[in-house]
Image 1: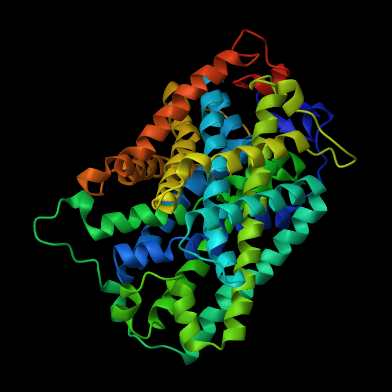
Image 2 (image 1 turned 30 degrees about the vertical axis):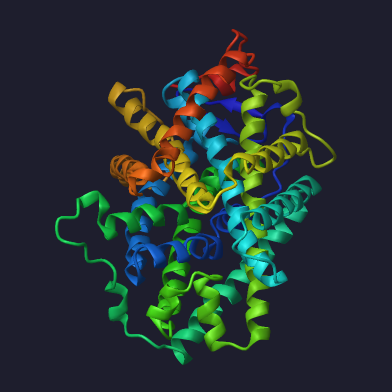
Amino acid sequence: MTREMPGSAVVVDAAPDGGMKREFTLWSAFSLAFVFVSPIVAMYGIFGLGLQSIGPGFWWGWVVTLLGQLTVAVALGVLASRWPLAGGVYQWSRRLVGLKYGWFAGWAYTWALLIALSSVSYSGAVFVAMLLGFDTASPSVLTVIAVVLLIITTAINAAGRTAVKVVATACIAAEVIGSIGVAVYLLIAKQEQTPAILFEGLAAEPGTPFMLTPFVLTVALAGWSFLGFESASSIAEEVKNPKRAVPLAIVFSLLGVGLVILLTSFAIILAIPDLDALLATSDGDPIIAVLAAHLPPAAVQGILMLFAVAFLASLVGIQAAASRLIWANARENELPFASWLKRLSGRGRLPVNAIVVTGVVSILMFLPLQNGQINTLLVAFTTVGFYAAFTFPVLGLAIARIRGNWHPDEPLFLGRFGLAVAWIALVWLALEIVNVLWPREAAELWVVNFAPLIASVGIGLLGVVAFRCSPIGRGAAPVDRQLSSIADE
């Protein structure tokens, strides 16, 4: 239940509406966010793209992007410490600015998560295909494997929180061995290059426009690697002591993932035996090629299995966040078929209907994307979707402070420092959205150039239709006025 303290924000004692049980701890929230981002998924999913597009110098994109995303994590931590509710991005936005603003924040975030499910499952399919000896260059083969991964993920999430915890723990174990363990081994025993290699590929040709320089491009690509840390807020109503636990989980999951990525990618780049030969081949994955040069085949197969576990766990975390967001929207009559989507099932009171919907939609998303650019498009769609979703609450915080509506009485995460960092986060998000949307392909590939922008506009227009078809869009009042009100000032 919730209780209103005089002159303060809503204090959450337990899940509202007799909702989900508080069975998660700080460690659970951290591990869910950690596996959502997953260093293996975050790095290995775009390592090949970065190496082929720029060269070893793309490593610096992760450094810049991690610093930028840490400002976003702090800003979201501030909001989570005030409103620790399921569907964080959506909940924060509607309280900061208004109901419609919050609805579209939730809509943008929902689609970012759904597209991320497709994107991560496709990237994971590459490693599963290698493990099974299938053709890794065939979009149809990879799509079938990705669909199977999504079916398995949906079954795990529907099975209950215990299954989710087991998978998250398995992923962290896989990260320790597959990321940190491999990195330490390569740095100690298999270093082939000097650190100077990290600057190769960053030099731009004379006369190259700034937005087309390799360094700016590498920051755009690296944006895909640091998404999902906010997912700790998606289970806030299932976490004990959420006002403290959720902000810490948001920031430390991102920081932990970032440091592992920087270490592992650094080790792999320095272990490249022949950079020119690696760049010249288009078969397989460059990371596996590097590992195969230094490890016996059995060890490489074992690492591939760890990668598969990490990708599966990441999918479980993403779907858990997406289903809770859809459930939170439906709970307040803000989606079509809200009464069905907000239904909780079983002794664990799980949003099974919402879980199934996320799986089906992510599978159907592959239908229009059967082409050679599918991976690039999914990476771009996912990145711009998340950055747009992050912008809603961070911009909303700025609007609330400018309007003078931000007057929390209770202490918030990092105090005044957290609020100051939120302004930096807003600037960073604006710059990165422009960077990701900037057209960089040849003129004849205009569809690839403008696909993320076209998709963003299409999702926005679809959102207008969905809002008008929803109960609240047709004039129905929110189910719970206490939860739906913007103000507690």
